[in-house]
Image 1: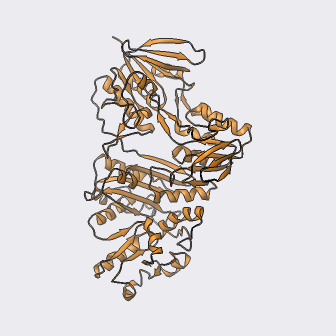
Image 2: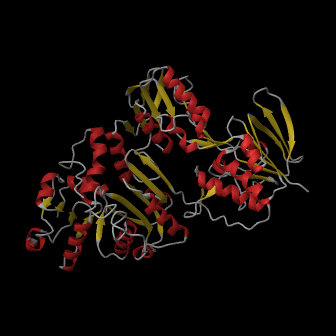
Image 3: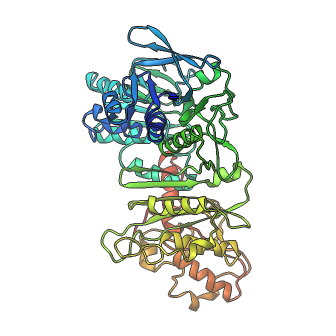
Length: 567
């Protein structure tokens, strides 16, 4: 008997369901309903039309219905919305959105992949104005670009500093617009920690984005946005990017259980609580592999894997649904950002005892042209040393290092496993010890209490308290820029100047990136000093960390010069 599979929604989840079903069953009747005009397109590419990187918005469409039919024998029906489900009769009600006609279509298996709806906060006055947009599909991006062109818009406000918000802001800048980016939290990108985010925020400021954090919008007018702080910003158009909500309307209507996070609850095989109905993609609730707690994850790869597993389960094939860790990356002007697993903030939220290390090696051997700093942070459980997450920022392909950590997390790795991990090396590609190896070595030292460290987040407090901070860079480096209260005792001189280093109170050591200061700390410990600390990340991290807040709030800098890049 021929199986009839109906898929609600296309793109990463729905289209993958349809394609997988065809690969497993050539005789199955596979029908995919999409309420919009495009069934398969690259969501993540949408903002790049605003800069002209993708000149033609229609090229974002990856495959049209005739191609689905010709190549896969799949009926991709666009401009048709599934408005109802009868689970007893196993039928769906489908409305043609062009002429409002309806029909009832039977199914053997039904897969929901409706995605998530952009949030449009009703608390913002004027949020429904003609100059306010959300971005979900090709139709949306065409509307935005047309409005900007027709109205000759000069300034655009982007509300929300997540992935889509940042990509939109960057592409608008590159498209020649002035941009306000307003984020309600204290930093952009919730996938990285506050200290790492400062590097990105400085980059955004350097490229002309008017970035405001810890600010919320209260009112939108045709020519401005009003903030809760009382500020008013010129703005002729607004793009909302404050998050999304799982589209659970059909699931709720049919009586399927909704999970704790608001997504559709599914089992190991992505079945809902209603027989013969599956769900995948942004609308479902998943399990975080590390915390073992329910989570939401709006990413293309997990949606595709969920689709594959759902269809495999449908056909009685074995699956292994082990949860998600959330690996993701984004370019921001010349910088690249990648992260996986838990941040420090998330470890705290989940009551996980942890430690974190930050290292700043070069992305290639230092004598090679254009070698640049690679900011790498590793988060790990204490006292076990189990790897929890990583964040990397730099001008190189930082996804390489983070992908290694994602693999280690997936395989249940520990920080000691990173020390001797044999990775590719050539002077133009990496340092001999990769950043991953270095992070493993430093993390193992911290885990074994071989030395003490403090985070860059603590430095301002140390300065204000008058703590003993020693800068072990050479004098010419110190003269170029330094922490205002730091004393300069170069690594090349400290053994002859031990009488200048206190033994009866804490001493905090830093250099440019943390390497020399670490060696000095180890030497002092060997000489009997018991209260010395290495400042993780050292001057590079301190100056990056302080820049954004100092620049935006006008507080007194604790350094004489920001971002001293002599590496």
